[in-house]
Image (cartoon, rainbow, N blue to C red):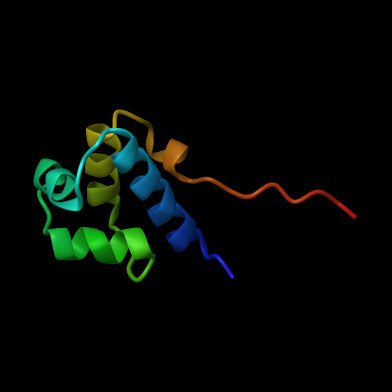
Length: 75
């Protein structure tokens, strides 16, 4: 099951790759390590509020834009 943390991480990956950036590129822009960013992108850890703001700013989006929820239609 996808957790909100994992879905958030997947959205970061998608937007980072859209820009042609590596994890190292984004990590440097947001002042964290590539290893920490990898954990965030895999949903293994959650980013704190300050880091969420820096990631969103680097990707030129609002923090809320990184929270993508799957649409579930009633049966």
